[in-house]
Length: 123
Image 1 (cartoon, rainbow, N blue to C red):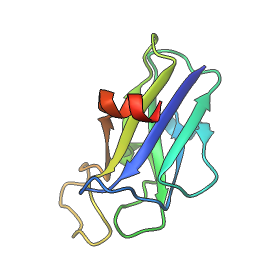
Image 2 (image 1 turned 180 degrees about the horizontal axis):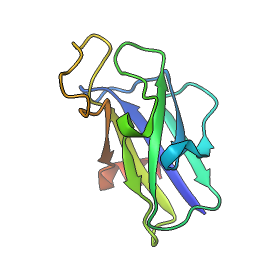
Image 3 (image 1 turned 30 degrees about the horizontal axis):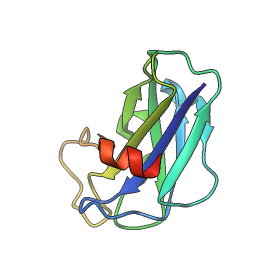
Image 4 (image 1 turned 30 degrees about the vertical axis):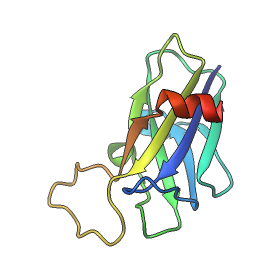
C-alpha cells in the first residue's frame, strides 16, 4: 500500500487551506481522495501498482490557486516501487488572477519534494 502525505502551498510558500485532492490514474480512475478542505492531506492507495503514473486533481476554493479538472492539467508522478510513504508539496504555479496563458500546457500546480528537515519535523 502506498501512502502519500502532502501540503498545498502558494507561490510564496504559504499554506493554501481551502483545497482537496483526488489521486487518479490516466483517464480518471480515482484511486484515493480527500473529502475535507485543508492545507494538507494523507492518502492511502491500497492496490497501487509500482511504476505507474498518478495525477493529483486538485480542487480549491481560493483565488490563490487554480483547480485542475483533467489529468493533462494536473501534476503527476510515477509511484516508486521501493517507497511506502511519499511526502511532497503541491505548489500552485498559477492563480485565478493570472491572465490565461497562451500555452495551455503550463501547469496550474507543480510537485516539490519535501526537504529532509521537513520530513523529520512532520514525520
